[in-house]
Image (cartoon, rainbow, N blue to C red; front, side, top):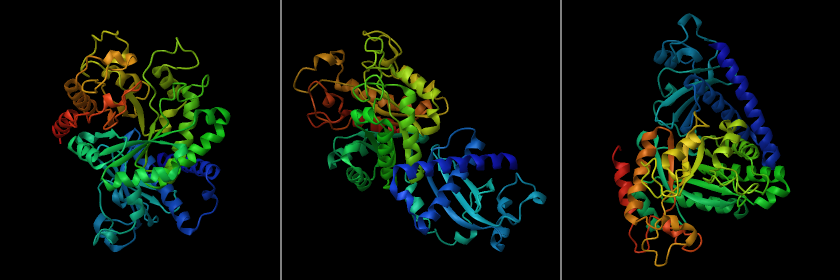
Length: 476
């Protein structure tokens, strides 16, 4: 058992050193730290050790919902009275009384809540050399008389990831603007997350504006960060470093989740001829390291590929989403995400259907097939639908665009029924951590008919909000 813990510590210290090394490359602020920042580094290192220990115990990755820590003293009489022994091991029965390390008396105690609602407690010595999982959750005796004000900063950092919904499932919506009407409708639909798209060129200040707006309305925020494909083509490594610094700052300023890029398997979003899952994983790795160094509780979601099977017809411009995710998996992308991003936006049948689409039975037509399409490559990774919606032209005041004629017969009532059923199936799957509805209140109705996907219809009604609200209350 001890050797296993030491292996974890060595891996953790190596990962932490690499993260800090990357941070020093992508942002100059890492080159000069005061004593408080240095202390913060010790806490982050200890948190990662605790996290690795829990993951070793679980046999799977840990997605943190909330964490707090205490500077703890395991030599005090009150600690002995609570646990019946002194030292770091006094909180576990895994170590027999005669083998408890009573010479390790000081360190950090972490309480960590995961996405399923299970809470763990782990201890890490000040020198990082020893760690242990506790049997039960206890507020250390020195803090038991009052809720500790410290560490308020880690508590703020930890306000992240799915979440409050039944079974750890969270619902949210993509907005064109989070006004009072949108916020009211989203709450009625059982949504606790909001998504906003943020170009790198818009700057950190715009991201902070989105963060503050979400918090003011009591939503958690997913930022879908997108960049400039031409800049990426001209200087890949330099632009990746710029992106990593950008998302690191967003995490430091309280972003609850960040999706790294959008549909990187299309030349609309990625340089022509350079589309490859391994290339994207290079970006994801840099972004993940910068985000976790800035705020370990910020959820990192991989950029959802566009559902498509068109790579044979458009070589260099398209890579099929399943091939792209296979390439990602082979490049080790599972290490650099908390959630796999997926899109589903071309359905014209119930999400419970597995066949019968008049366009043919290609997997991207069906909800279940699309879920399995990503899950097969990342069996131990949670899924996040970062864009899921059904297009209806009913009530839009003009014909549906010709290139979207496949959705011409979808009614608003069907849209409302299917989006709620997709939420049910996602929650029941046990694989889906989050579903972001595309979309809440977009109004554009032209060659890109965003308004037809919107829950808020032109007449001011929101049938989908009603059906979603009922679905989310079913297992609340």
